[in-house]
Structure formats: structure tokens, C-alpha cells
Length: 195
Image 1 (cartoon, rainbow, N blue to C red):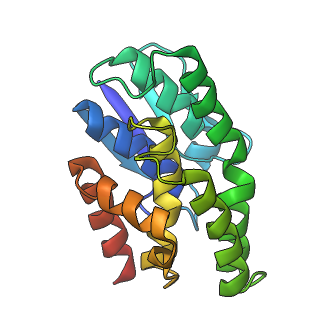
Image 2: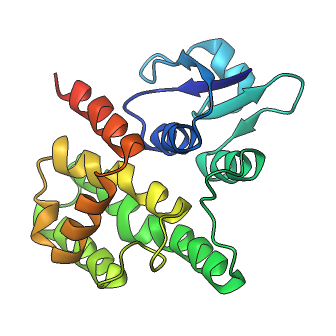
């Protein structure tokens, strides 16, 4: 049985939850309280007990969302979340490389009061431009790249009250992703964090 060490508010964990949902994989969840991280979690994933962590029987533990996402996609190949074409696979990797600058770093700076909403919109405008009029981050297919970005966009919109849909390409992309059951499940998780 697969176990996910998870924290609902953590967007990195959301990546793993979404991939698991897309694959229809049964798994157990161990919720980790991030504000009072238990000592056993630090022992499980030193030095700081970060989540997500995947555990599967006698296999090594897999921390880090990107590693977990790739493992899950290869271990459970249907439906595939990585393109077959080598250039498109490279573009997924490129999207991961650009993620910190485009979304993650500005999001956390906004959340911690070190960035204004207007400055965050500059980052969103960069992401909107990267998207262009493509259906998904890497062209016409939904991939791990989309799953990598969506948790932060949902949290910016629903938890930080950022009008992310002011950006036309992001709005269209979000509408398309919200048609997916796995994304709707994550929206429910994010909505529960508001209360």
C-alpha cells in the first residue's frame, strides 16, 4: 500500500494528491501538522521533516513533490502525464525550472507581506504570457507541468484573494483544469482551508 505524508494546506503536497487522483491510485494518508512538525516526521525526512513524502512497502522513501510526481507517473502509467515527444518532455522540465521565478517565490513573498498584490500580478502576467493561447502549459496536453503550477494559482485566488482570472490566458487555463475531477477535489481541499 502507498502512503502519502501530507498536509492539506501545503501546495507541494497538492501536487502529489492531484497525480494520485489522476491515476486513480488507492493510498493511505498520514496528516502532518506543519506548525508543530512531529519529531518522527523529521526522522522520516531529515533534516526538517518536509512533506510530501511517499512511502511504499520496502521501497525507499520518496520526499520532494517533483520526485514523487515523476515516480507516480512512471509507476502508474495510465493515464500518462508526461509527453512521449522528447522536446515536449524537455518543455515540461523547463516549466519546472521556471516555476520558482514565475510562481512560487512571488507567491510566498506575497503571502508573507514582502510583495504587493500589484507586484504579484507582474509575475502572473509573465505566467500568462508563457501560457499564451495554448490549452495547457506544454501545448495541447495536460501534463505534470500543469499539476505543478495549479496548487499555487488556486491558493493565490482563494486564500490570498488575488484576481488571477484578470489574466485571460490563466483564466482559460483554469477553466479547462477545473473540468478535471482531480482539480475539483483540490479546490475542495483549498476551500476547506478558508474556514
